Image (cartoon, rainbow, N blue to C red; front, side, top):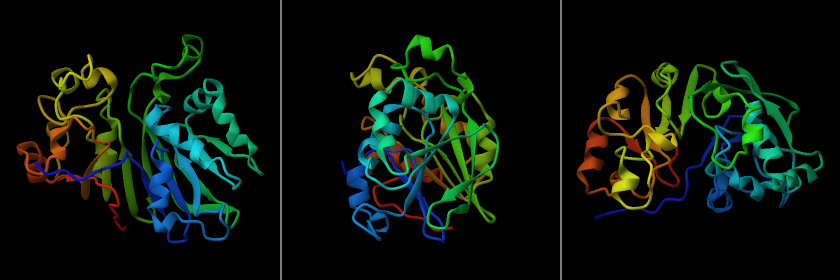
Length: 278
């Protein structure tokens, strides 16, 4: 067996102007920032190029890193209205983000609408535009029934399209497989980073670490009938990268047949420190 160590899924997208945007905020975010010179403080010990965060869901893996960003610098957070309400109403600890001066700015993002991002350095719109695509899934288990009844299910989990000029990225670390709209965005992108969490649907059950299938917890498995390798033609876009890979997934073993299968199908497997330029 041959593995390389990985922290939890985290992506930073940086424009030519120098501002960077995080796609979600992983539990390992502090360590990831410290190991990435591009994100190091520049103007002062409490100022980094991170201008904002785009959230695909309110899952713990997507928001836990927020608490590492509670220092005093401007920060813009982009999310659906439902995700914002879950983070702030259901988890009062995140109100610590309001201590910044100015406080963290939340931007409710309507589905299927292009929205320019914001750069604090020049107090104007960034050259990067974003679009949130509904993927169809349930809200996290920790959300109360009272709040759940007030939220839009379409806003529970989204994919993110980022565009600058004629270049485009599609990011979806969780693909529930209940909607096919994402395929067109992935196929038209120069880089797509897609859900590689599980190899097969019964992976958690067969490895003895869970009682639910991949699909039951919102992840399209890679293999099998209706799996990602079958559902998405790898010839339909630029670079195709699997991200958010669970530690039970055999593709992490670079000597495994599963690893060879995804590589032969034209997919790359994300690793810490991976970079790509558009």
